[in-house]
Length: 207
Figure (cartoon, rainbow, N blue to C red):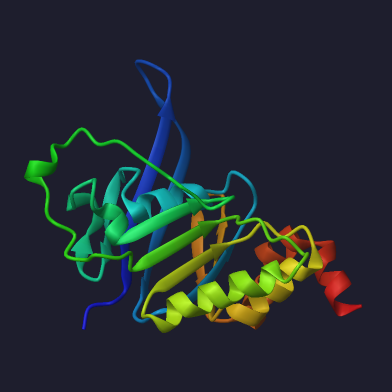
């Protein structure tokens, strides 16, 4: 059975200037997720988290490498069907849209009627009226239906870490374009770049 998601030798390089363009940012990622689950992701602003999500959904074109969703190369799938494989919700659950210069007639069909990978980019967690519990139940339901869920959070409150610990089965930390898969929450908070990023939140948690 094909893995849910395979990110293979993926790079995205941004350059600026003419005629001798200089590299301004580089994202590199290589990881594989075999089964449905909930993946927590975090990292500093500007580290490449949203770029990674855009590459996974096919709304951004990689410099090299590939993204396979259940063995289908997302960048070779029709643009009007890519969200049937992977869909990106930005902040207040708005779906990210994109354009492509390649005619859909030259691209493959998605082969899926409903997104297999759901990427939530810094969703807003309202602490009132049971909203958090409602959203966590929603993420769990997607997983139970055989989907892969990414939950990208920029923790600025202790309860954000508690949410990640409660619901996520594995993690990804992104910093300066480097994507580091981490097996569990204990490994995440032991990862030195993550500890430096979280700072006082870890002290609050230990208190």
